[in-house]
Length: 112
Image (tube, rainbow, N blue to C red):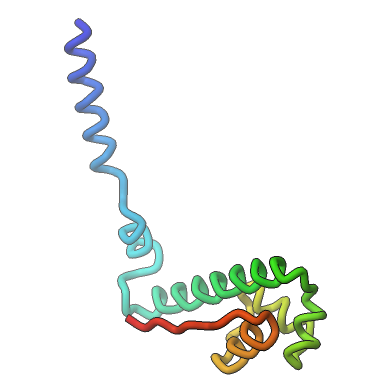
């Protein structure tokens, strides 16, 4: 009896694993394939969010307020807030200035 239960459990697990989608499959279904406008828009927003999270954490580690960072880099507190919340399309030169001049952190760009 126990042996049949194990076989049935294994079959159930196998069937369940067939239904599980990879993260890429989920993104394809929800936002379209890579290269489509909807997927590109999603990818841009996701990267803006990630940059904001990195900025927020580095600013926290530097024990700086948004206002202090803004003053140090010649921007406004509201601009720093928008970046941290993923709501700003930031120029690369500004990104470098905020991280390198404001936080003393080198920025490395990797393409590919």
